Length: 49
Image (tube, rainbow, N blue to C red):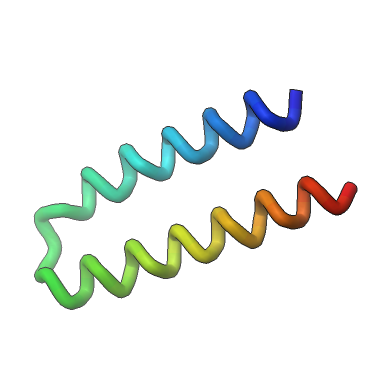
């Protein structure tokens, strides 16, 4: 359950990253890093449960 949920969340975040492609490059990369780090922290938190 948790794995499929995290996969869905990850896939939805990939879509978000694609959507932000029209932002200026520097801002885009910063936001991409923030989203990825947030996702990694979320997954780590799920593993801890």
